[in-house]
Amino acid sequence: MRAAVFYGPGDLRVEDVEKPEPGPGEILVKTSVALTCGTDLKTYLRGYPFTKPPLIMGHEYTGIVEEVGEGVDWVKPGDRIVTVNSAPCGHCIYCKLGKPNLCESLMDQIIGFTVNGAYAEYVKVPPRVARFNLYHVTEDVEPVEAALLEPFSCVVRGQRLIRIDLGDTVAIIGAGPIGLMHLLLAQISGSKKTIVIDISPDRLRFAEELGADVTINNRDENAVERVKEETNGLGADVVIEAVGRVETWEQSLSLARKGGKVLLFGGCPSGTKASFDTYMIHYGELTIQGSFHLTPQDVLRAMRIIESKKLPLKRLITREARLDEIVEMFNRIRQGKELKVAIRF
Ligand SMILES: [Zn+2]
Ligand SMILES: [Zn+2]
Image (tube, rainbow, N blue to C red; front, side, top):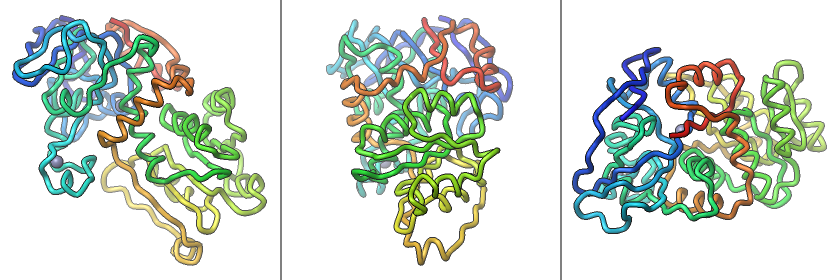
């Protein structure tokens, strides 16, 4: 079968590899669609701490069950399914504490990072993922919508933690695919006003098209002042950082009103240190919330929202391509020409 194999930073090759066979508890899926993701681009450019090449990349996908391994009786060949890229072990201390996103062995079986992924004609779903984080895809859900399950589940997790209240003004820093998913979800969460902040005019225009009430260019305008203007001098009720840079982490606190909530969603490079005005956090009684990855409950809730068809999530896919165009597509994303690309098989 054809697959995009990562050999090291900057070295991704589309080549023929052996079609995998499902072992006990595993499921072999014929890929319909695989999406590009910012993390894939980062891995392609710089590598990923847990990724040992050679490895087939790709983790946002959907497809049709080709074959099931021993003991799998919840799906059968021909079923349309989607999975996320990981699943918790169920027995470590964090799983028992009800924090399965922090599972101690989460990294053991991550599709596209530590086990072969979905930039391939077939993908083998590891046992844990097959058991905990797999869903059937109903007829009216399009493959590109289903394939968004993993990143959208992470967004759902973040907003479940931060809880947007009715009538809140929500400021989102970052208008990439993740920031825009936060925007779409905030719009159906009872918010009064959504403000999107980015440095790219193209992305801000797209945020406007998706219904952002206010957009702010973080390079040309004073975002803190503008957010105050839009909130009667108060600051936003909820601020979501979806960039993953120290400057925007630090900025996010200045955008919140007293008593407001800040979701630090974007992951910065490891070792990053940020500094904050303690006065704001103490006397302003800010709630600062981190968010990492997803839990099976987030996946369930994300799947329900995808099935509801209430969000135009598929608009985040700006182009379709073939597998052998993958490197070109990563370059287009890097140049800001695409948000997400759907690789069709
Ligand atoms: Zn992803
Ligand atoms: Zn665990």
